[in-house]
Amino acid sequence: MKQLTFLVKPASSLCDLRCRYCFYEDIAQCRQQASMGIMKPETTRALLQAAAAECQAGDVIQITFQGGEPTLAGLDFFRDFVRLEEEIMPDGVRVNHSIQTNGMTLTKEWSEFLRQHRVLVGLSLDGTREMHDALRVDPQGKGTWNRATQALALLDEAGVETNLLCVVTNQMARSPQKVYQSLKKLGSHPLQFIPCLDPLEAPRGSMPYSLSPQRYGHFLCTLFDCWYRDWQQGQYVSIRLFDDYLRILAGMPPSTCATSGACGSYLVVEGDGSLYPCDFFVLDEWYIGNIGQMSVKQAMSSPPSLRFLSQGRTRPEVCSSCPYCSICRGGCPRDWTTFGPQGTNYYCPAFRQFFDYALPRLRQAAAAIP
Image (cartoon, rainbow, N blue to C red; front, side):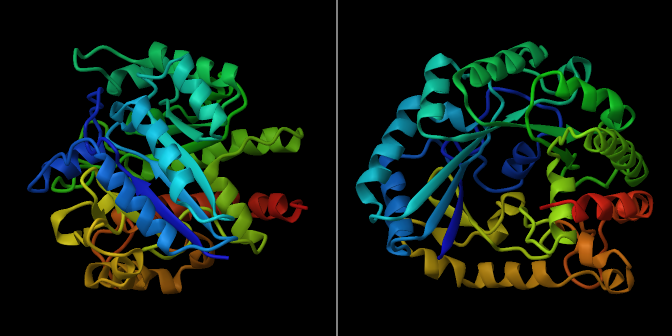
């Protein structure tokens, strides 16, 4: 069985919010063309035809829609996408869909569509109203917590499977217990905590929201205490990073490239069909080609893809002597000071602090996995 993964940006870098830490806005400003615009029908067709050409019965295709804000492509875009998908895909090929959204455009009609097509939704919610509204603002500078939680209520009411994605900033890292309890009050949803990214050309730690390794280490340790207490009481709260560590300790593959120790497992498809090897590196230097002009096999074996794959699999030398390397696996290269052996993960001190503190209890929880 083959699995192909595409991260599709149907509205490119277009967004209806002005989040102060937005990494993709920063990436867009670092390339010659900031936005590739809304994906056209011919690009959608080219993408689906290229994917179908690589598959046969029993294979799985994962399509994740991101942005910018992908819902700005419009609900009709997604209706047409799945309609065309049903027309093009070979019999026996399963296609799974997910979407990452800020929730601002979601309505009952959207929610019904997402439920009908079993689209997994990742909704951005930064912990608490105060923290969210400080950094996730609209073009008028107003906070968006109320609109985001209203979107969550619509998704829950429709029965849409929804994860909550939370960007960990310096402010948030001071209050992990408050953040954990706030998100739990919103209902039973898997949680994902993502360390905030500094702008590409800015020194690490130079922004007001920048997350330091020390703060992140404290955050992970205290968050784990909250999670572990619930686990002991028979209440399992899915936190993706902890889930991955448990899977690794139980001898199973993790769910993310950051915890797998390898890059190059998917293709990013920008609004105009441009291809890149990773969402964190949608930059001119990593441009592969266009989905309308090359096959998936050609894209994955192109010089930029192979170079990215090679660099992403070369762990920093410091990892080889680390007792936690088999679990941490070096993390995401976006957090490395440089690619390759001479680099180091900026958050290495945080992960060492976390494993020093939590590993015995992680092993205990992993041993209880059926």
